[in-house]
Image (cartoon, rainbow, N blue to C red; front, side, top):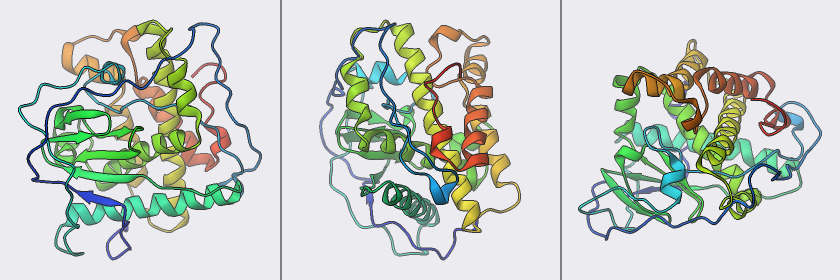
Length: 308
């Protein structure tokens, strides 16, 4: 990805190396209505391509955790930590002093430019998320989390949280190297913010309490796949801005493949249990990322009509 020398986002909080704070339970984000017959309306818009997207197709969000079912975090089960970081932040190092922080800042700025244009075309203003860099553990608006959770979005404070050591794990443990694999993860989390700021997330959470775990998992899969599709739309935008290099899209598709529920479970326990899937299979994640990338159209990201 051609990111060096480009403008960074100003919406980055650097909490790396900050100790203190107390262990708090993750805030419960409401309930879900009654299971089988519940249908959450999805706003529909007309238009095609990034230049003519129109209104958004959106639905709820849960925390993105590669190794932990995000629905268990929402229910209030927080990791066991001796300490978590306080909410104190410091400015990012000057450009050129911290390459990975620079990279995150540039990717987030590009997502801001994309979604500001999308929202403006729909006659709305876009308020971007804050992105929090932390080390080992952090206190979020959703409670305490640590690096084991993976990158996640907290709708209660509208922030994306990431321990940058995750990228080492993405490369070494999950076999997904490359800067565009890293960019895909960020764009996916920003996709959850898009789901939040349009107001559909509260509907999802208000309806959630009546679902069984298996039903909630099925909703979660559709939510995560939509965020993958939004990440694909961002990749299409990056291509329009001439930011892509050879192999970038292949890196993102490989990352989507490596973190599918079936691949993850087979890697960790030797077999997969489909009823526990909460993010989608490798094939599904590839398909929805590619759909967003191929079309650049949010109207193609409806994961809630028909099969996924």
